[in-house]
Length: 260
View 1: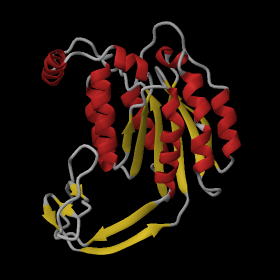
View 2: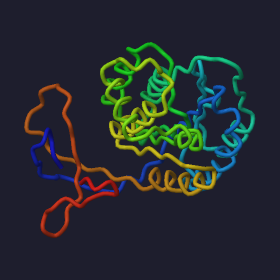
View 3: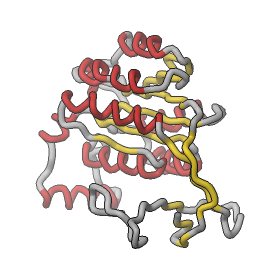
View 4: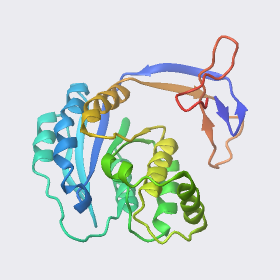
């Protein structure tokens, strides 16, 4: 365990046996309308993988956020609510960042292990300041976000060349990107959201990948661990905490992306 880059002595490590509180947050804007049957049909794999005492809730968002189902241990109630979702058509704003921030507020007073399962394109057309506000809230929250990116076919079809991607990334980072509805920007946002909360971001290419992803999410929610250390100083500041898996020589194990 590294606290701001300094290795710390681990004082406790144990499996977390408590039930999970899971909010499924679904984008219901126009971009998802033609895709929704595929990913929601596969969501049964998530519900089947949850423990009996886990509680689930459903939220939706497009221009605004709505709590469609309060936390319940009735998984069939969530399945029924998913079946009856209403999707917006035509042109509409997508206030993704603000909506996720609202979802974090919903879960803030709930005790125990908490997670948001996010079904989204990751596109956002809201004011520029909403991203910074969301980042601050993610860093202070104890909610893990597991993001499933919708629109895999659209993402692949619109994938830029390496030269275009480099130019677009430079424009986006400098604030000169005129297109807020950019899948490249959306992918970066989803990866950052997952990283900031200890979650994961998934980018399925087609509907066949959804069941395996939902099963993996259920496994992550069911099998979690508590790890602790005694901080050297209680300075009231935000710290970067990094957890590494090491081999018998104490060297960090590389993940799928080649990073520790």
